[in-house]
Length: 295
Image 1 (spheres, one colour):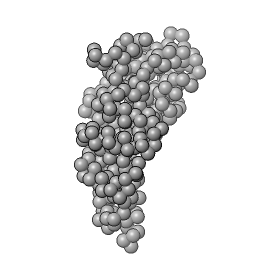
Image 2: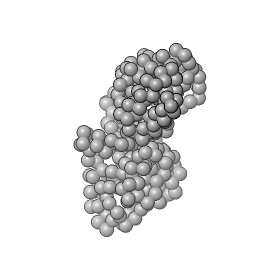
Image 3: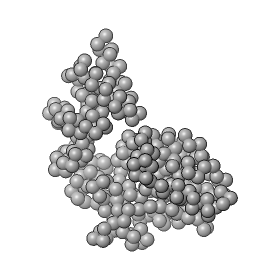
Image 4: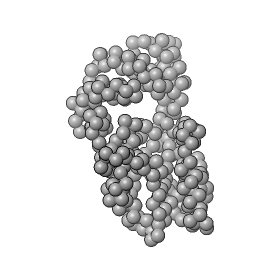
């Protein structure tokens, strides 16, 4: 019976993490580890639950104990590295990034973090990094943006579009649509709204709005590159290019796929004057110089 209870609690904790029920995940993981404290896989789940609840230091302790037993476990190394980043311990994070690269030199996620921790600027964020970030923030994404950050850009852009197209006759490509805040602000239009996002959890939330005709789970650069020309009246990329970096292909491709007189609406974070093109901040968001955006 104890074994059955442990297995059930372990599965429940893993499912709770995937569904962003992090407090429940931690509760069930703690109950499971109390029954079977010597199971490494279960300890890993508990550490993940601790980290997702913001308890990074105890998570790091568990990760470190697990790595003492299995030093080359890349999944645990990656999780500990992220915990070090979240606790502002760049030297320790860089050590784990170097170890990860030694295990898999071609892994784009490891290369990205290794470059970032050395103060270098990667060209863009790998899809895996963006997906991990937003898959685990979908549940409280709207409350955080609108409640805590007072984020009104989707509503503002929706009003601009309704002013420009009072008959609502336009087709819209919503790049990095997230939970569909722009679509929700627009409502139903006399055209199609297509959402693009890497996060399946975000797409699930956006689909509940009932205004998107279609979703594509791809990154922004691929969506722009593979969309036929003269295809959309409006392209929106709100709080999205901060995760892209190099924009040299973004503007030309947007221009290519817009219809005549179409509009590309996007936001960026302004770079300090000492940055010539773009740079990755410690927040893992890119900042851009206006000259780079317009080049």
